[in-house]
Image 1: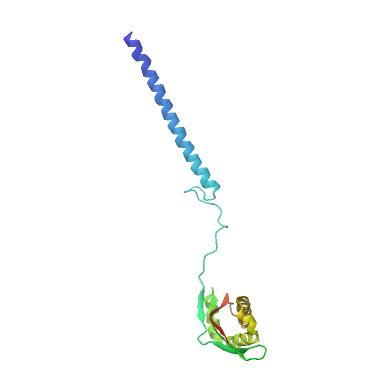
Image 2: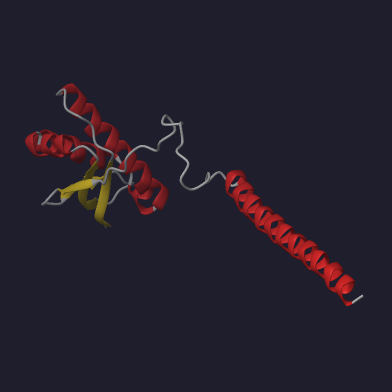
Length: 166
């Protein structure tokens, strides 16, 4: 009889061991699938798997470079009676270094054009931030027109380093 009880316990232990191993494998598989599904839904993809979509790469970042106009633009501005002055220090921003070389080359013409744009601005416009932003946009357009006429690459923006009206 003792032999019968030991023979019955051995298969029961093997059955429980198989059940425990099966449950552990199922839990590990469920966790792995959960992680893979989360990565896939978030758009990150699964690490180690190559993406066949080469067309959706972001464009390479190009840092801006700047050239300062050494001397200030000084001119009179329109007003209702008193004579008013504006003094502006400007810088030019470009992504293309060739555009900044063109700025250096055509500096006398650009300086003249920018002084004209500044003198045509009204005193009350230059006192408001919106008026200054509009002036910067107008100056950028004028500089780009000159550069296009000279068949040079264009700039990104004209920036004010110092702006005084009195």
